Length: 299
View 1 (tube, helix red, strand yellow):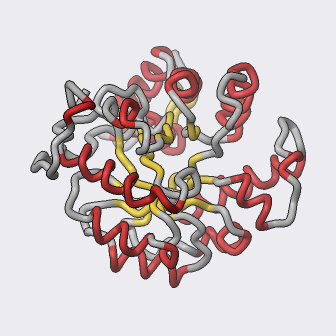
View 2 (spheres, one colour):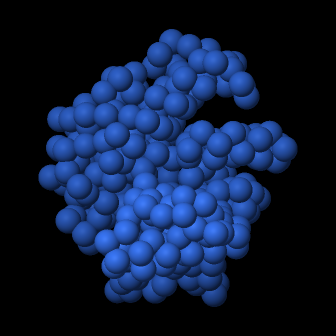
């Protein structure tokens, strides 16, 4: 916990500066409402690989300032966290500019901007954002969905989150089609994944909002992992646990990747980049690069 007693919170901001997130794991991205002080107080204990503090559509306009100040207060006393911490701000023209300016000197890892449409808005966000923070976006508009593969204009822009309900509305499609094995949804997921990867962006799949329906959430995670995703947006600890398990690697997979890395590098020193291995068959550079990717994502 950040504070021992939520009834006697400090009246001024602290000076704590948490270190940047040190790991590359991105299995789960848990959304938190900063009006819930109990949840905010536990971000230093969470099992989520990523935590998004939400200032956008879940916060009523009359309470956005309160939510913003809550985030700033808790971040200013946060000394450590194993989670990658993101603040989701409002669209730039609806308060996002001011929120970024206010938050810039506090310690967290990334800003996520809602309702992005084009490169111009990406460029504007980058000029506002402190250089030590990443830029993430919520992909919720038909314009961004169409042009995602061309939106990355700076290496600080690293991640795209699929806001599928808003995207369906933008595309004038009913939200009722959001079901497993619906071909339109499969196309949206596939296009989002490939366009993000083509641009060098990390794609995060959508949030499943039926929190207690763990069976369907599990099915979505398994489907998305099969497609190539490795991160799922989550509503709370119950979903985080499932996402961490499904998108994580078991010991056998890690051992295989470690073995292939070591074996290839040993043979490479002999100028041999393709060889038969008794344990895993033919190993060459593409197999080696896949092993490196697996190990990188689990550091």
